[in-house]
Image 1 (cartoon, rainbow, N blue to C red):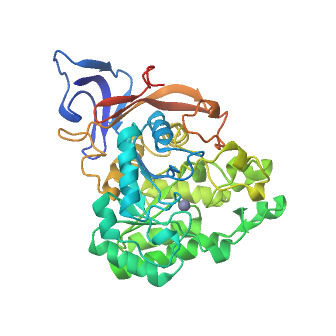
Image 2 (cartoon, rainbow, N blue to C red):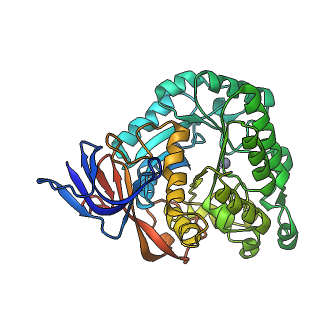
Image 3 (spheres, rainbow, N blue to C red):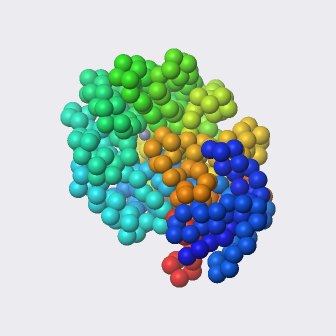
Length: 430
Ligand SMILES: [Zn+2]
């Protein structure tokens, strides 16, 4: 099908484009870009007053399939992504069983091909079974389609194993993503260790649990000459370490989630388990440091760490609830309302951090940009529309999202994947 998107404000950070343009799409690719395209026999989308951006990429998503389909499936997670404005998502390895072998990576890709409305890129585990003892066959997994490696949910505790993983990743030119947490320090903690953990009587996770691992991993990456991506940065101390590492030309990139930017530990007064997340919501000072890090470019990208759980699992005492926030369907409106509308970052920078740079980090060559020959993955935004977050409208199976009821301005209006409109959903499918 041919698709003509007319009169949209096209923003492409990779080329610096910010102009009113028409885009012609054919066979899943962008084939023409200019001020006025006149052609017949095409489906026309009027994008007047809308922003046309390269498709958004979330490189930190938990899809739960196989093994925990009551929380989420590839099908429902992809629908949530499409509704949230994402055209591509990378799914973490902590499924049950863990994605540590070719068979599982291939299974995820084949299920995604059959059921997912967005592109799914599997992230395989660094160690077998995420046990931290033995490296996976990374070359074989890359060959099967894994785009990166992570034991997300935990760190690779053994420094020697992490060193080998980084050395090997350099050899085969792939990416290690680390969830930085020293479990000996975080132990039984359920929230940020500080004033509020004492006030609320909950066990704390100290900032040092993240800082020590970020520090170790940047040192190991430097020695190996490898690239490391730090998942969900949450504390000021870790921001400072990443900033210093970048200054010293260490190949480190970092992401931040909406919940770590827009919530803080004081919110836990409600003991609402949808606020229980790992790393935990940190102090106000940490939040300020994260926002500053976004402004300064110390943080490279945004990611959701979408971690759905069933309502039953979260409907327990705070101590007993699983960690995780369901984020795919609220992230974009949060970033637009809280960062772009408040002039903390420009719209172009936001698009860069949610599309262009994630594509570069994951090595997705034809994504994250709008140019002739690129994949026709596009996110169209309505910057003026106000929404009220309602978890009951989620396509995700999870409802564990603390932003319920928030009024936000700016929202995804249309999601196009490979030249196909996947959101708004056609009524026949949903
Ligand atoms: Zn994690």
